[in-house]
Image (tube, rainbow, N blue to C red; front, side, top):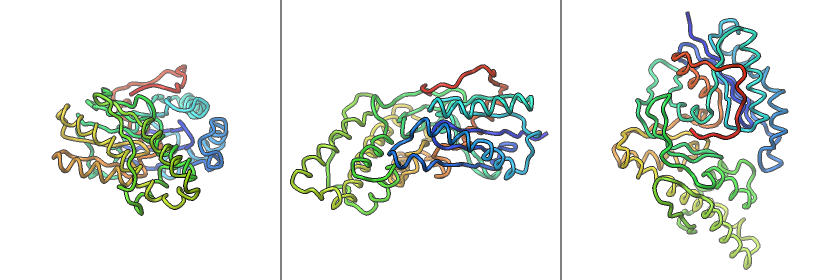
Length: 338
């Protein structure tokens, strides 16, 4: 009998459903929400309302593309948290109702675990996946963490941000430059046209493996303030150089701690995950570092870096094999660490 797992993701502003058949990805459908662009960030109430509109057609489309009927499902895996509570409630309630109706197991998944385990998503039998243990640099809009992944069930945070995350630094600096939300992709695009040595921004001196990006943001704002006094068109004239210098500084901060973690743990495999791992500068820098350090680099396909249900389904498949099913009464949660 085939193992068919439906994954459901609704932690923020993307409604996604995915189907795994015997460990291989059969479909991954994502409905994004453009309504937030006008506000420069995700509006929680609007996000939950759009999830309600999208959840049924997205799940139906995922099943259709996979060529399976809902009666064939072995289990339903869903994102329980962390994320926006209103958005999580939509996906959680739908998953619970569907599991009850079909009388099949329900599996709750930590959203961050999904990003860490996204490297196990296979589209063909020949796709390679990491071996345990490996080191994962988890970087997104809300999280910057170094995670020692000992197994699918055992993960240890060995470093994390003490204030803002790398994605927040990208988005907030992009906003003051007048770039659309989300700002990270626009910074990445402009950085490829600019001179990364044009501006110098402060870097934190945090002991151990923890990160900090608040000082960088302050340094960036001071640079804009000081130059705008003399030139009102400073930002427009220097967008590419500002973007390139900002991106290089963030990458330097990330890689400094990643290199230390490689040396401290002795782990010979390094993976990246989360939305910021789609950044072209980050991807190249991690590959270059791993090549110099003689370790294997696992760089995810860009379609698996943002929030998606394929990573929820793969994380759920590990739990399914261990029969780690969840109770119907478990509520979603907004915040948690790996």
